Image (cartoon, rainbow, N blue to C red):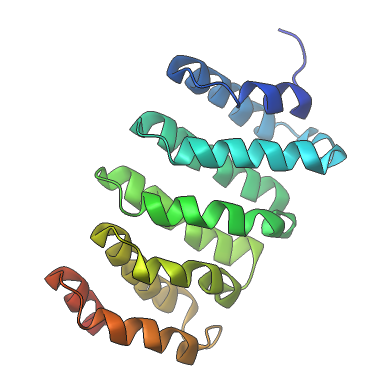
Length: 190
């Protein structure tokens, strides 16, 4: 097999075929696990941005296996790039909010896990919450519920100190009147 590079993966992640995506996804995970991947990742930031953008489409895929693969690869990028992934947070967070409303529990859980990883490895929790707060108004009740559950986990893991709670309170107050009883119950747990 020929050596792979970000140039190769940038082209390959653009494909729409499910089988092809799953195959190249496994290759990309192996590549990201290799010790020499970081210099190649940062060689062409434009190509890296296109790759992350394409993977964000994977996360939003209606095929749950592709969605899970996209989440796993983005998690591997976070592991490799750490704080250097910060410029991609806004691009990724919208897809993560949508996936927290997925019908499959595994996809919802992995989306929340990735959000918490972003808080731990990429940017301070409040930076992530500034991007994530729009999820409190999401049209899908499961996404709204997922954002509430994510706030509960954020408070359990990081505490209230890294958050400016006053910025989140208006969103939480609106959710007290949410039409979904589970969301109202979740708000009470916060």
